[in-house]
Image (cartoon, rainbow, N blue to C red; front, side, top):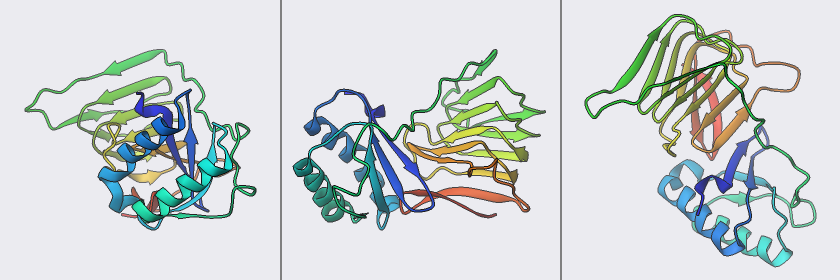
Length: 216
């Protein structure tokens, strides 16, 4: 059973749940439980504003609503007819092609990866712990860490912290101006009209099932 068949996307109004793949409804319920239960405190109070990607029947929607509200302490906004329960809401991440892949695997003793210099468009840096960049991350660059990501410069690329489902992870930067942030399976994209512009050091964390950006 593929755990990446459920993806969370945070917006300013609440959380969308994207159901991917061809798994059965029972399998989706099990996968949802596997993702939420270990990190329940990060999702309590979250507002669910849509189920997308896979069409579900009204009785399945009602069952999901009951589970989400009664077992996980979240709130489903709207009803079956007003929620986007269809395949029309396409938030699939577009395929990324990189000219250079820099993948580093740490040993048991290693705690973090430190890189001094600019991470340029097309570079993909992956690490099994924390990533610290002493420099800028340009648009088109991609960082992926099992733990947290710190950029001591301008973060304009894409950052994925907590890639193994660790919602305690965070993303921090002197200037946080990303194209996309992701913590665990929760995605936050730049607002329409261009990347978010930061004036002070900021940190992105998960609260109420969403990625929240706060002054550091």
